[in-house]
Amino acid sequence: MNLDDLSPEMRAEFDALPREHREWLIQDELLWQRAHAIAGRASVDVSGVYHVLRNLQKSPSERLRAGLHHGRYFRADRR
Image (cartoon, rainbow, N blue to C red):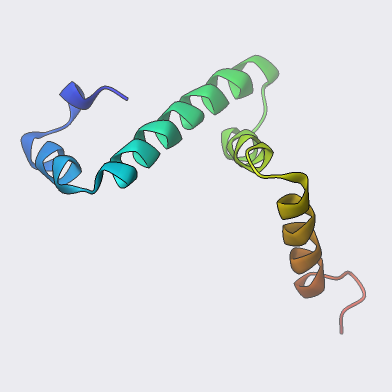
């Protein structure tokens, strides 16, 4: 993320955020850039790659919990 590319207004908004939020935004932008690079090589959906990369940052138990929770609401046999 190149902060020099931000407009003065956006830069002021960015600088006004708490440090933790600024760090998260920078790391998230780097993750999107990585997803774009991977998707370009594999000719796949960038957002799908981003979500996989984001989920890989979670622990296995967090991924399992999210998968089970998701499955409760999106069962194929649900009426």
